[in-house]
Amino acid sequence: MNKLISIFFFFFLIGSTPAIAQEELNIVVQDSIKGEEINPLAPSKAAFYSAILPGLGQAYNKKYWKIPIVYAALGTGIGIYAYNNKNYHKYRDEYKRRLNGTEDPNGKLSNLTDSQLISAQKQFQKNRDLSLIVTVGLYILNIVEANVDAHLLQFNVSEKLTLKPDIYQNDLNYKKNVGLTLNYNF
Image (cartoon, rainbow, N blue to C red):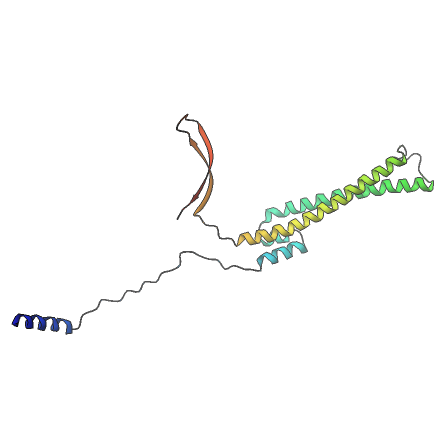
């Protein structure tokens, strides 16, 4: 019993003595993903700029190499429209002169018949209208492209996902094979 009391007394003394604590260690965990602040109005702003002046939305997105493509596409459409409109009016005016009886016998179109003039008028009118529709479509495409590109600038691209071409040797016949590998790293 004395042993039991002495053991109890020993643990009581050890338990009641103040323990010396170690210095407290604070661990601060920082987020490893660096997120850039997303501007939700950037796509609409780019589309608005591109609607005001074609190519300005691409400049807002800092894709300056696209501006000459936009102007080349719109300029080509406008040039084709002007060419077809000029020829349409030329053939129409000649046909009107013939109907009034004031045609020029030495003119460039004097060797054409009335049906050929009407056919040429219709063809140039059709091409003029089609080029106008295509030019308006290119203008709208310019706006949509600026909007989509501004959306994609805010898209988080991770290095964990890769898609790359791969050339490897076949083990059976030792020929080179071409393939595409899709890797996702965790």
